[in-house]
Structure formats: C-alpha cells, structure tokens
Image 1 (cartoon, rainbow, N blue to C red):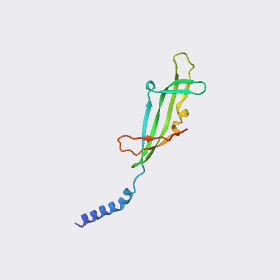
Image 2 (tube, rainbow, N blue to C red):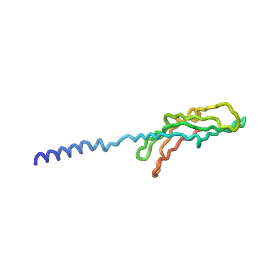
Image 3 (spheres, rainbow, N blue to C red):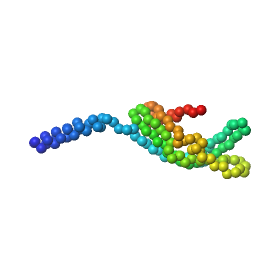
Image 4 (tube, rainbow, N blue to C red):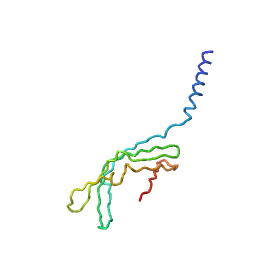
Length: 129
C-alpha cells in the first residue's frame, strides 16, 4: 500500500516538475524538401535589353527548400541549389551554359510562410527591383 502510494506521488511529482519544460514549447520544425528540375518541362527565357535579346535555356538541376514552420509563422529558403541552363536554338549555336543559381540568387532568397488555413504551405518572397 505504501509502495503504491510512493510510486503515485513520484509519478505526480515527475509530471508536475516535467510539465513546465513541456509547456515552454519547442523551436519551429525544420522541414527540408528535395526537388529535381525536369529539363524537358523547364525553360528560362531571357529577353529585352537594347539589342532585343530573345534567348531560351533548358533548365536542369536540383535544390533543397528549407521551411521552418511555427504555429502561424515561419520562414523558407533555398539551399544546395545546383541549377544550370543550356541554350536552346533551332540552328547551330555555341555551347552556352549558365549558372541559374548565380543569376537568380536562389540561395540568397528568403521568405515567410504565409498564415493560411490550408493543407499546403504558401511562401511569400519579397519583391525586388
């Protein structure tokens, strides 16, 4: 009888002492998603300028998207972006390969996870000039 009472008091003490640490909360979860770009479905177009440039590049590569989601807030960023493009042309053209990560600064982009009540994550990236 006394042993069960002691175990019960020990369990209650453990729960009461452990509860403040559990109620303190946790850091937002880091979720890293891996993506691969399909070359046959991905095209980057460069146009404009004073010379009237109009070039298309077949884009290929992979990148990671890290999201840190809290209750209603969070942030997102690109990591390990290895994305490049090769020029598409109807005629003969020199082999031109561009580093899409460097041109678009993918790893430098960062945004906020938008607070929406949906089963998918919406990310807002800041506008740049």
